Length: 198
Image 1 (tube, rainbow, N blue to C red):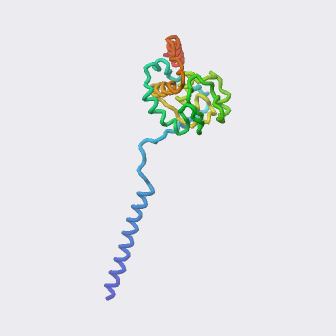
Image 2: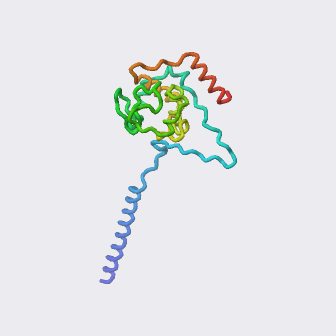
């Protein structure tokens, strides 16, 4: 009879152990989800300069002006879906977390009524308006082009993506800004070659 009681106790301990292991595995699966291979939204972190080295300044940004005429506004419209989380793109659309972007190409920087711009953007006047070149630099790395901006976006690295998006933004106006002239295209290419040593 004692042997039967001992078997019952051992069986209960064994069942409790198995239940604990199974519960642990389920909890671990819930607590540790599958790691993503790549972050869904990339956030750039500036690398600290090694001591004794001066910062070289912002890197040259490949210009969009030479490819703007052949850019795809439809592809830019697709890319703009990320923008609509913070910006209105509609004619007469109000400000959101960011200012409305209707008629942005050629508009004065920090000039949208009712939006509280950062001091960095409000005081930035090189140039004072949003040109194709300044939009390109801003979209490449906003915080590098205008240090202190409130724009929390890592930027678009591919020059073709920036050209497509800016080509689309150009269409968001009653009267779209003119495309760059041949002289402006040549000047942008020459400036980029000089900046990159090419």
